[in-house]
Length: 560
Image (cartoon, rainbow, N blue to C red; front, side, top):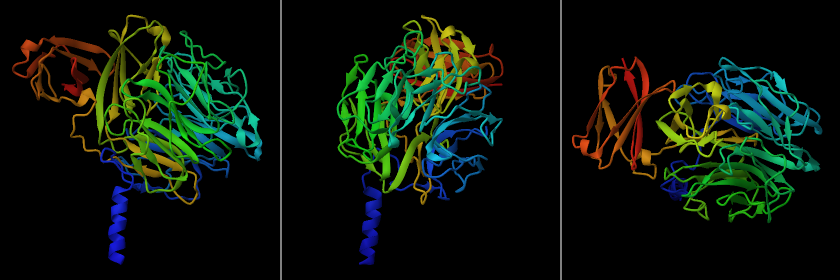
């Protein structure tokens, strides 16, 4: 009988809720020591500058005042069970956001403090821990005025190429309503009071930036409790209205978390939100899409069948078919994945983990760097005023940006690790320009989850993707080699298969400068080897890209 139970258990672990297209185990590969931590906020970014993504977690929630902590990547995707760094201060920390706020090349951390030191009887605040050349401040050098806020997010709210911070407002348990807020970045400095507020008050639990109306500027969405959800859109000058252009209708109250991204084969912009029926509502996950402009109100275009205390949510292309999938978790519930289809998501989960934890946040990054790819994408600037550009993949790292023939430095653009947009200072982008963005992405992103169940740690589910199929990503449909590499006077591009259409080759320096562009007509490709004269290029590291109407592929070239 014991042998039969063991066989059944192994079968259950390997088959429960999983799909052959989903490259994650049903149990986490890593779990941190619980340490009584009530983990809520989550960020994945290189804090110490060693080139490997670290894990930043904000502990506390509304249960106990605790620390902000960092687990440093050990240089191979592994982490110690206990944090390597913790803040000197404690608070009821909510969610956090990570990005380079002061343009010094180091990732800073903003954290929402949900409630104040006296618990629900006192409001929280927004804090910023600036990164001092690889180490976060022990105590935050920026603290806002006091207000209740559970979540914050970074994005370019005013189109000037740096990261601003938007926050939720309110405390729904006690029906305390407040405005949504934006704290604008002024050369790395922030006022302790917001410079943008919504025109009315509501109780919001999560917030995110995204270009929902596709005019090339950042809009702002809020997930709320006990009221509709709201979208505030920016005009063509990048000014976000403080009156919402859209609100949800139907059974839409009591939403916990949200994410913004492209949905379906047509890459329609959409907002996915998780319902949490602790205080009311139907507790279902909902998708709102905006394929025909921004209506004043709309119902969800997709609704999950299961209800519950759902919480953390993320859009990400798990199965590498070029369509975003839906990942979410809940309180004392498993992680679920619905694969994306032509319009939305599968109606039932394609993957269900064998965990039951109190999920707060879900993020993905290539922690062990076993699936990193280098890419360059180009964009024609139209319409006039466009300064936000959506890439094909979530960003691991941006290595360079070129506007037409001129490379620009990071002082003029911003991005968030894990998101797939880059925002450029609107003053230096003109209609008719071509924008080139060089960046790293991954085909093997690892899932990280924070849990506020103090008896359980945080989770990592490592991707075991085997990249052998010809997926929907055009970039993977062909490969090539460079010889010699390093090179000096000439480099030969060797194609692994014959091509029947024209090919364009571009070479760009890692600082963003476009150095060379060569067009090869199809009738010159019989030998499958393309020689390139590089004697006029200086020593250094370059990106070489091949593309035509069938494929695009990118590699690094060293010139010595």
